[in-house]
Length: 444
View 1: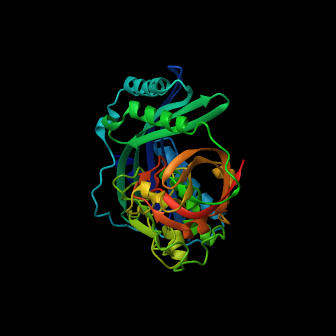
View 2 (view 1 turned 60 degrees about the horizontal axis):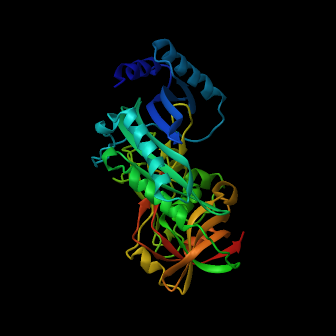
């Protein structure tokens, strides 16, 4: 697709730049939100654009267009040349013809694209309906949402690189609000995938309702330090919050607490953290990054030891190493780094066994304040939480809202046991439930 457009840009730029890279994105997305069985929001969008990076006299220039005609293509090449003269940056950029991955993964389902809008709306209405019917204590369903997206990406450069890929994905998300007198609790459930036949509105609704109801009737907890179980969703949330510290760009800019810690032990020996762009179950999977570099599985922490950072080719060249295939940009933006499928390797014991490790354990099933209460540079966090008190392996009762505080690296060092209940969240961060030796808890 788009061979003629790419050929025109390459031919026009051939004699006036030293090298050029072309990146095309074509994306469509749909989402709907239901409230009181009425459509509260309905969104459909289509975007398409071409962005280029050029090299001229050792400098990089970028430009983009959303118009697909020859005049616009010539214009962005000329703009990129002008921009290169204004940019003061000593980063060494080299374009290459990178190889393909040797793994054949399918990221596109034609059947998903054939699902009718009416069926998706009906599914979303059913989630809300089943939530309300689950229990008399469900007083509202603030979130009943479903959406799907499809995108096509194509990248080529003057060194002969030419790659393209089509992907699509669907998601459903429902949140139930339960109340018992003055006590109100909210809980969520989600599903993400490419096989719509596996989406179950009834199961999603019942699970969300069950979670919210079980949190009702919370009791106060005394301020102190407790053994903690972060359930799989909350451990994935913690990983997401602090994932930026693994970016080589952040390290090189002095914005990461992992600076200078390569090959050092930074976590308990049972901790291995991976970024795997080829994971068959991850929604962040892809065959190549936004430089065309082949995707891979990168072990960042191996049995507690920091092995590498996430790199694009620019940061890798600075550190005299190889890219990890984590370059990211869209047709409008400059080059950066991002995770793909980022996760904590699972353990081999059941979740239930975690709660037999200490006489008293606090389980955390909800965290708020991730943006304001977590500092990715220092690793410190202070977050509002919800959960349960467990005693001698049995769940006793839910807890009123409390605050947990600690440090990300200290948390990783204090992980005693990891369960086998692995889950990717909706943003493709994954984890199992983990038992942490202790965290500070204060009553809110």
